Image (tube, rainbow, N blue to C red):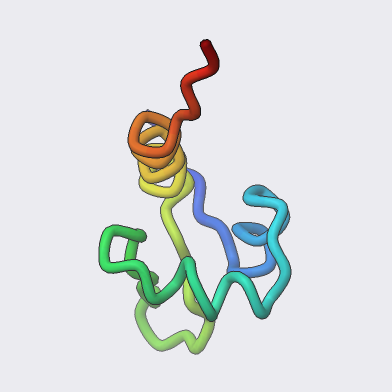
Amino acid sequence: MSIKLLKRLEVQEKLKVSTRKFYGDIATDKTFPKPFRLANTKTKLYSENEVDEWVKLQMEKNRIVVN
């Protein structure tokens, strides 16, 4: 199993959101994956798998039903 780690800007690109939207709505969402740091680094990283799972949950939760 390969684990891909993303920086914040990569997460924003993946989600197609601005920095304002990311920090205003997404990062404050309690269900959004929390970032972490590798030992002795300053860069916050996100698991791509966790971000993808969050997106799937958002799709299920917010799907618009058209009649």
